Length: 273
Image (cartoon, rainbow, N blue to C red):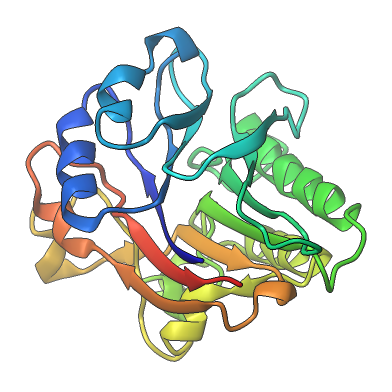
């Protein structure tokens, strides 16, 4: 099965529905995972997205911020909406895609939006940062509880709000005390990755020695010239899918689109038997 999977923190799906439509028509993903949809489930523009060729849609939304949605051309058997951290926020959604060969483990897609963490990297005075650390710890416990690590066929995507490598930020030295690249965050993200032996698909296609970003602040007037970016969006796969990701692209051109998100989409193409 050829599978094109895309992930995008859209920063309000209703406000940027036209950009989603533009992206889908150009890139034709089979599965599109959106984060920060900023709407309740009954407000989600389901009809417009079904018209784009996504008859299978799962939404985990809430009033105001947060929220994730998975759109698929491929049927899925179930949708698991889970409050990983117990704070009542819509940040995790998993679906099990149909089409697995007889006798093979199902293919599941996990769509995650990790809390941003606020501005101060001190959990003693910033509850948002504590929430972020707690959420990452909850992810470690959740995925660590899965059995059959070598056989599970899972893909995890989303805005994980952590840039783990020195080359995932524009300046490792200057951002060590800036939320998204601090040691408490990067060490916890590594614990999440190790909990189920996840493979960093993006870094399989772009050397860890090379800079790689998916987010540029709205504060940068000329984001491309300054290039002060961070890699906050990720695509991971379990060892059972090692080698299945045959291509990966970061669509930084969307950062120039009008009224766009500060994140850009990431596409991974998989060949899955």
